[in-house]
Image 1 (cartoon, protein in one colour):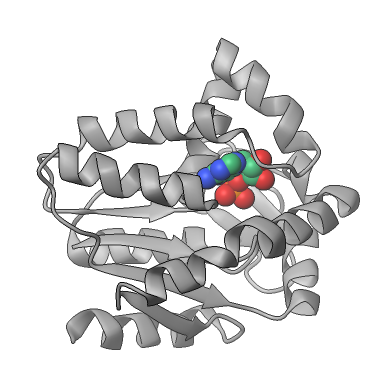
Image 2 (cartoon, rainbow, N blue to C red):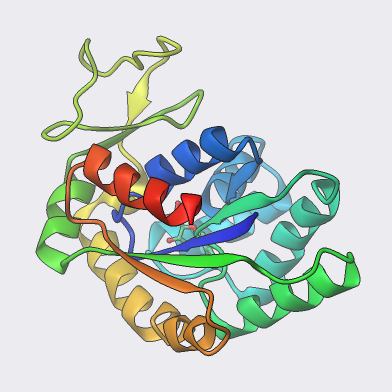
Length: 215
Ligand code: AMP
């Protein structure tokens, strides 16, 4: 199974992507996590990406495509993959198709779009906390950690992402509508698009996914 997870920021792609990865036993990568890893390691790519990420803008296609295609190349012997947050532009989608062909990996199996109304996204993102070690996602209101600011799983500190601050949230949602929404028709045309309602609780969304993946 080669799956991409699309949807606005705060739709729950990270949480559901982790679930799919465990359920199907395939690796998952989030392009946002790859950029954050570069930032933490103070690489040139990380420094370059930071200036875009802090403002809620997309990192330019050239940089993003190279980084994610390297990940695909390194994981091409797995049974499949889940991509969370990639592609976000038509150029990225076309680059992915080309890379799959060049690596003899065939076509994508499913493009899952997780749809959530904007007011719900804003409320989710404003209360989001992320583990600095394992990237587990919490929410002050909807999915709080057992102990304040500490990850339930690895006991490391939780933090508020720079781009989960108010102005950046607005920009990220705008960018999603401008650049990523056109991908819905791109994948509809190849009959692999699946739309799910991400406004429900985590368990309800997971159940929808389970049904889709069992078919
Ligand atoms: P995310 O963790 O998916 O919300 O991504 C955080 C930030 O990383 C985004 O707001 C962008 O600045 C950058 N980013 C992540 N994925 C991509 C992508 N596919 N294309 C361009 N920028 C990206």
